[in-house]
Image 1 (tube, rainbow, N blue to C red):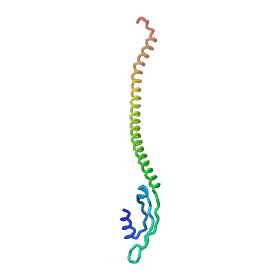
Image 2: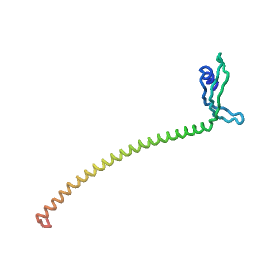
Image 3: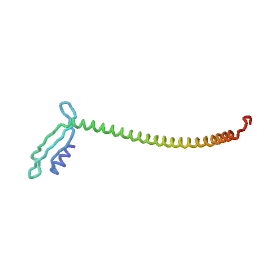
Image 4: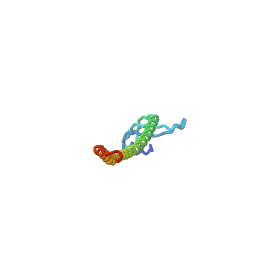
Length: 137
């Protein structure tokens, strides 16, 4: 992969190189991430004369990037859960409001149904008291 990059970008296009890649360290077979940065100089016929640059070990940065990526995925999953919970809570709130409206309408109706006969009973009671009808009747 690095050879293809060097061939295409550095040799053919004559661009400076700045590439991150993995290497295997011979001493302990550890995989390390490095960043190669530099440029090539060419002779008149297009052959590389020198390749000057640096290689920086960026393994720790890559590990932090990976950790951040994993945490970001966790947060996105939590956000999806929260969105779903929010939808459910909104639906429950709407149902509760509808239930409250139904309860209010029911109580208003019952109140009206109870008041009408009670007013009639009270009205007849007052009328009977005014007429002075004996208790036996």
